[in-house]
Image (cartoon, rainbow, N blue to C red; front, side, top):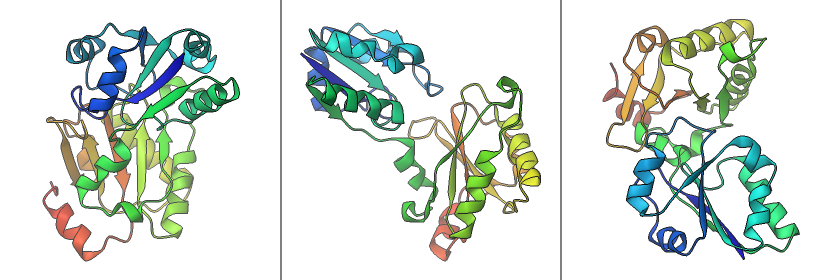
Length: 241
């Protein structure tokens, strides 16, 4: 039958009209629940879309068992933000093509575009990186600091996506410790965005030390700016705390 890969956007009501029509035709609707701290619950989505939703963990997505169901029924996978934000989702599409399973992709807004509200030019962002929660690792991965250095070498900003469950204080501590470990020069001020793209959105532009003490709720991301131009600086000033 078909697989529908649907981006839910940044709020529970930002799904596209076309995607909502497709949902009504589905036999099963799944929600991927492992890549982000969701700003809305499964139950809220069920009420907003008027469909029954089942949660799908990483194992079920990566073992591609959802494709077996899509061979004989219409199946939707809801993804926070845009439908192709994670490489796992593209792997699903590639496998669907390989198995001649019909599929349709419904795009939506994601953190990769919402960060433009900071005033920083999207064209000046380099590689996006992720910050893991060190408490869940036997070592302390610092690869995100290496990406920041690489972006700095081309005068680019860096978006840091923080891991599920990682709070602002330990995130800042990890950033500072990794900077020291990798000989990374952090700018005086960085940016924190909480609840991006929602009515609860908060953007703060401050020193890492000050941000560490702010009430910044999950989900949040960090931006390490570089070579800020005049227009960007004027925009950031309104978030200067």
